[in-house]
Image (spheres, rainbow, N blue to C red):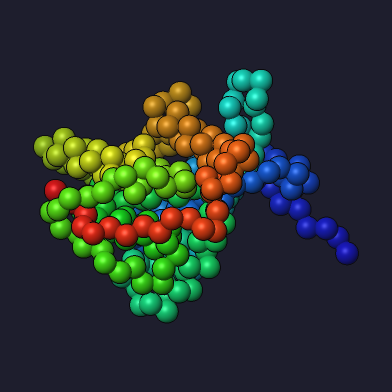
Length: 252
């Protein structure tokens, strides 16, 4: 029987299947409401190309990105990043959420994606994070309101998070400052760096840009916690992770 081979790409670089199989890997979830552009984002991250005809993701779609950990240093090592694009809505029936929970096992990092022109998609990131981190089929006790938010719960979270806002180009100029101020608070709540971009323009992630640096730093952090941490309780994917429960969430 002929052995199947796969390839992974990172921009212009192509890795043959046999070499790819020898690389260590990490698993990163890509979560967010339907229609925010997760599939377009994953395609841009993995293929360095714009996705021509995006379609709704049913279940989960997995793509691979090659990443050089600590690039340019003596510790440099190539890993591949599995990006799990999870479909569905945070308001789905409990049976759908229960099925989706299968994708949340052994997670090493999470990219939270929201539409910068859709405030509700930003609010729902709290629920997505709760669902993934607690692996609950139906998160309870979550109230989105103007109240106190305990950011320490995410400060203690061992799973690295990255916040990405899409459709940056569609924000009216006169509303851009308000939107960016709001996303800055969101980033602070999640104790995560933020990237705002347009998935139809690869220049937002071009080498040397601040967005590219943030992305590389996030992947380095995911790899660091998965392969180089000494404290087992801080290992991403640790089965006895602390449960997250928000009494109230603020969102101005």
